[in-house]
Structure formats: C-alpha cells, structure tokens
Image (cartoon, rainbow, N blue to C red; front, side):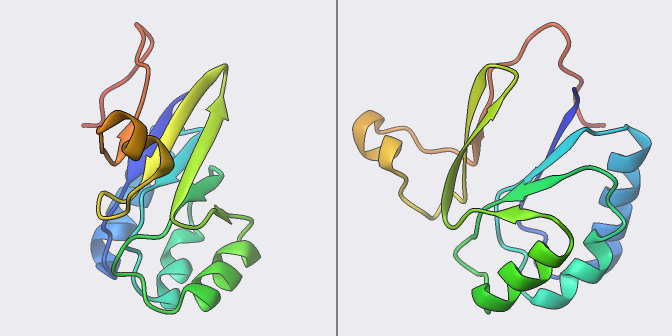
Length: 125
C-alpha cells in the first residue's frame, strides 16, 4: 500500500487541490495528515481524495469541533493531537511537531511522522 503524508496545508486551497490530484493519480491507499488544516472549509477540497484519511490537529488549527465534524462527514478520522496508526504490522506515530506526544517525553525524539520504510516504499515526487 502507498501511504501519503501531508501537513501544514494552511487553507492553501489551490495547493491542496494539486496535492489531492497527485495523491489520487498515485493510487495512495491511505493519507496521513499531520495537522494545520486551519479552517473547516478545507474539507470541500479534501473530499476529492479517493483514499481514507487519518489525521491529527496542529498548533494552528482553529475550530477543531467543526473541523472534526466536517472531516467525519467525509469519513475521515481526526484523532486529536497525536495518533498511533497500525498499518500492515507497522506502528506509525503521527503528530504535529509543535505538540509533545507521550513517546517524545520517553525518547527525546520529535518528528511529524515516523515510518519504517522498506524496499516497496515509493518517494513522493
């Protein structure tokens, strides 16, 4: 499965459209979004995505209640400020970098996403 990763889309609707189009062309099976959607109206542009979306909130996301509602209407799963995603036996940590996740305290490591890559990984072009 190809997994896409986005973050910090910040209401840039034309760029979101380009990203969603490219992700669809790549037949991405899952999109992970590491936050900073900003406003609930971005869901209108995200609804063109063919893959499921799992996301977290970033430090700039405004109306989180409405963002959650609008994304839920699309079938997307926004999991708060931090999420572990289990995918094909891999545990993926997803967070916005401005947020301190439970594993950051234990390891001192902070990143937008942590992946175990293998020979089947395809770089985003």
